[in-house]
Structures are given as C-alpha cells and as structure tokens.
Image 1: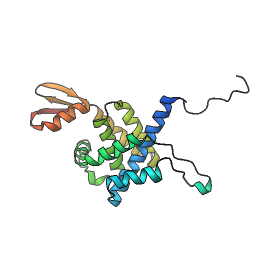
Image 2 (image 1 turned 45 degrees about the horizontal axis):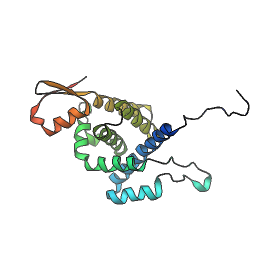
Image 3 (image 1 turned 90 degrees about the vertical axis):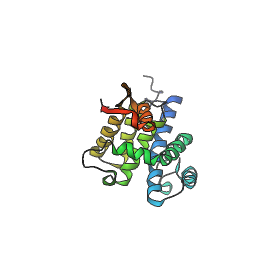
Image 4 (image 1 turned 180 degrees about the horizontal axis):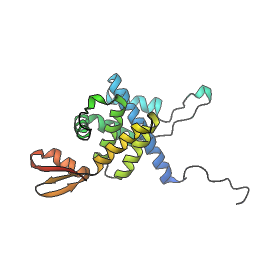
Length: 195
C-alpha cells in the first residue's frame, strides 16, 4: 500500500453506508424519545420538536471535548416515534403475545418495553426494511443500554415475532402482513404457529 494512502479501518463509506448510519441513529434516538414520553408524558409534537432542536446530531459533553451524536434520519425518526405512540395498544398486544409464560408487560422495565415497541412497530409498518435488519438494529440499541443477556432477550423476542405464521381460512400466512390481517379479522384466525 502506498504510504500516502490511509488505511481503511473505519466503517464503509458512501451514500448507502451513510443512510444506514443515519437510520441507526434514528432508531436509538426514537427509543430514547419513547422512553422520555413514557416517563414525562410529553406530547408527540413537543417530543419531536425537542429532539429535532436539541438532541439529534447534538454534541455530547461539548465542554469536555465529547463526541457528536450521529446525525439521524429525521423523517425515519419521526415515523418511528409517531407510529409507535399511535399504535401503542396494538404493539403491546403483539409483544405481550411473545413473552414467556407468567410474563406480562408490567414485568419489563420501561426502557426495554420501548425497544420492543419500536422494533415491533418497524416490523409492522416498514416493509422497506428487511426483518433481519430490524432484529439486528434493535439488538444493537439494546447493547447501548444493557448487558448481553437483555440484548439476547430483544433478539429472541423480535426474532420470534418476525417468523410468526397465522392460518386464516385454511391458508397459511407469515410475517407481519399476516399479523395485520389477523388483527383486522381476529374471528377468522384458525391458529397461530411459531415457525
């Protein structure tokens, strides 16, 4: 290698890699916003405004030479936050259905619940994002706050959610589209199978 060429030790460069980093930053910020809303009851418009003006891409510990948060994809952030809040009851029903025997949403700490809600929302509402990528991204979000055990819990629950199958009218349907159909016509669901 030419001594004038710096080694390529960093993350991949280019527009696609930049878009992925911006979406990853949006997911982390969305979970933080959902957590704040769950604690303070902040209205959605105020919450979005606060994050847009003071959190997304802000300097951390600027006076101490801290890092700058990655600039988030704001439209994606807005969708994750607004959609998760608008569909909280539906998301809670979905997540609760995948908790182990004897577990309820009340047993989850507030932050864990926000990670699971946001991940479930993205699986429901964002068919443009591969399901495996959603699972991986929210495991990374969990690692930002928790040890490996809790991140593994996020992985297990979201992975189960991604492979859910319903039998409706004798036809087997899979994934989140099936969940959406099943929630619209629950009396037509013959059985639910985890594959």
